[in-house]
Amino acid sequence: MGSIKVCVFCVVLSVLVTGCSLFQEKRLPTTPFVHDEFEVSGRIAAKLGKEGSSARIKWSHRADIDAVDVYAPTGSIIAVILVSPRAGAVLETKDQVYEAPSVEELTQRVLGWSLPLNGLKYWARGRVNPEVVVDHLAARDSQQRLTYLEQDGWKITFEQYAEGSMLPRVMRLEFEDLKIRFVLDKWKRLDL
Image 1 (cartoon, rainbow, N blue to C red):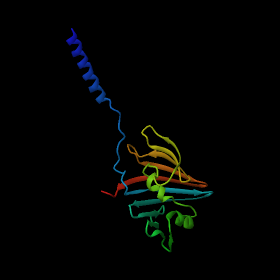
Image 2 (image 1 turned 180 degrees about the vertical axis):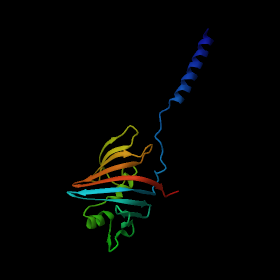
Image 3 (image 1 turned 90 degrees about the horizontal axis):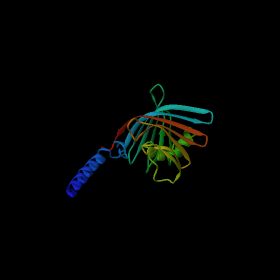
Image 4 (image 1 turned 45 degrees about the horizontal axis):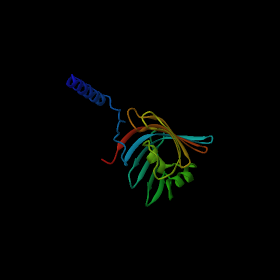
């Protein structure tokens, strides 16, 4: 009789172990875009007080250089922003070239508002910038993706993620009276 109980116990135990392996916790989908070098195309709208503007962008981020092409609604290129740690930031339009030590300083001087590219290289991938203290990490969704973050004076709301991805699709950034909305349409890895 004792050996029957041991057999039944072993069968029940093996069923439980097998059943547990069938109901393992779902892992977050990995994305091929967690790497440091990427290209993203999308749209940007900025509003400072009552003034607003919008454009299409194509941003290539590599370890040694960032290149942001800015397009008018008609599709023509209106500016190119180049940023490198050694050379600082350059903004070229059809008529002029502007230079500054940082992209934030350059865009503040030329556009009247600061583009936080140093933070964006992380935020655009749904990450916290590890180089700056987090002011306030408010929330993550059920898949542990950021939904809201305060960092470096910016309030970042991750409004929508790309389907089945850890990459944000729509983000809203706010700094004092400045509001910037990004819609990130197309991603491409550059570090393959």
